[in-house]
Image (cartoon, rainbow, N blue to C red; front, top):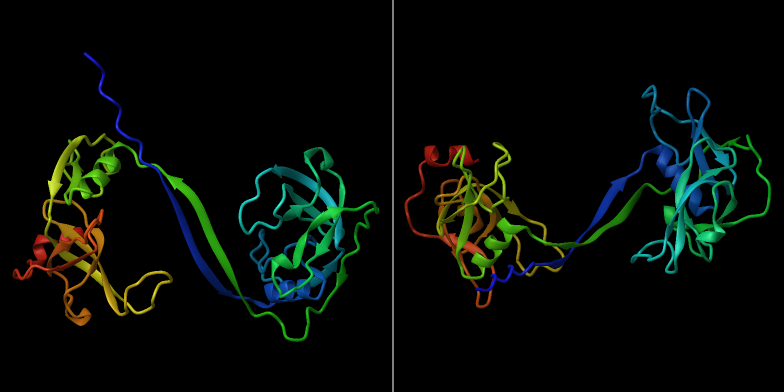
Length: 320
């Protein structure tokens, strides 16, 4: 008798990426515009502490802060960590040190990269200075990195600054990106494998009897493992929905379209799905829908109306 082979461990590289747009108040605007002009600004708190990067409100009193000061582009490393494998879009393409630098005249430290050949070349207490980017636009990347500096410090060198510049920066777009490898556990592996067979399988809690789809391996309410697998659907009911009017990057779907919460028959909570096969302005709560699969698809492409009468509100009100 031979032991059964362990199930295949599923792994998939995933990327979450989006542009984050924010407007700037007077303090942050002056700070980033100053970087564009080769000036590092901080803000003085009511207690006399100089904070770099500047904040708009005192972390102790919550008082609004507006007293800007200029600090030196040189400083001291307060702590550091070596980054031997830089990731895309990090400040340097070669190994470098992440450092917290207290600039001369500041009382707090600024996080950035330090360009040194190896971990033996960096230490707490070493002197560094700003290396400015060749082209500056009004962003933290206007500081290309820090580099070693042999000069001495000048404590208390912060000088008042009015924060006034020509063509101030009033907003920024930060490209947020997260790369990671996802490996589902036992419950979601079974769920994904069932989808490849065009079946939707959840798991029932042995205590409260709620059927979780997708399954989580445990009931978050009762705190017990869920091992009883239950096939649900394929049809379900639209519980809530939204109309999407902004086209997503790299998504070949014409707007407007409807994205909905769908409670599959037999499931204890709703999952997400796109609604098709019906004008967007005719989608409604209680609409009965069924999955539509594409050739070779491992999950439903969208859900379409079944033609059944709408579900009564009392049948799905607990799943909103």
